Length: 99
Image (cartoon, rainbow, N blue to C red; front, side, top):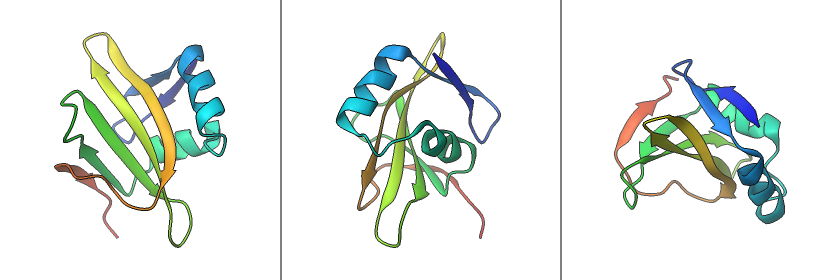
């Protein structure tokens, strides 16, 4: 199990099971990328398809973003998955980094 801090200094838990899922399905998603994304996102959105999830984004390359999905539960914040994407998903913006 790994525990990361998000931009609000809250714990975000990555269970061993979810780490295996992420490493097998998204091998480019390193623990360092997950940590950086949670700590210093360019934007955080509420998921439009799942009201208990938040999507954290950082810029990975000129044309790609890295996303970490966090489930907000009564007993903590849990990393659900992490992946590279070409665009942000629809959803209400709850945080945007000032440039």
